[in-house]
Structure formats: structure tokens, C-alpha cells
Length: 90
Image (cartoon, rainbow, N blue to C red; front, top):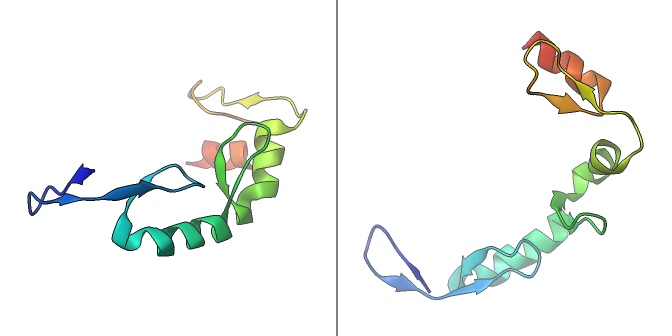
């Protein structure tokens, strides 16, 4: 059960089998169908990733590419050279 901040009422919730979020029962079926259709759970790390970003996730997180760090801020790291170049521009 989750309490609604606006009305003070309590709404019953269920846990989405894909993203593990608590969703109001009234919205659950629509959420879960869309969540399963649009996302996948990485078999290597368990992260929920949009299907459109699956290949990028595999390359960025699970590839053997070396980790590149930003020498300007020392806070940004990536395995993608283009992402590092874009970060440096910002």
C-alpha cells in the first residue's frame, strides 16, 4: 500500500515483474505490458535497460574496451570515445 500525498487516501499497489516498481493496481496492467514491451533485463548485471539502448548498454558496460576518464573533471568515465568527446565539449 502507498499513501497518496494529495488526497491522503491509500492506493493498493502491485510490483511490476520487469522494473520492480510499485504501481497502482488501477494502472498496473497497462504499465506492465508497456514496461515488458519497451525494456529488457540485462542477463549480466540485472539492470533494466530500454530495448532501444540494449546494444549500447552491452558496449558501455560489458565490453572489454578500456575505461576512458575525463582529465578535465576527473568525475566522468566511459568506454565510449564519442561520449567522452561530447562530455568535454559541455
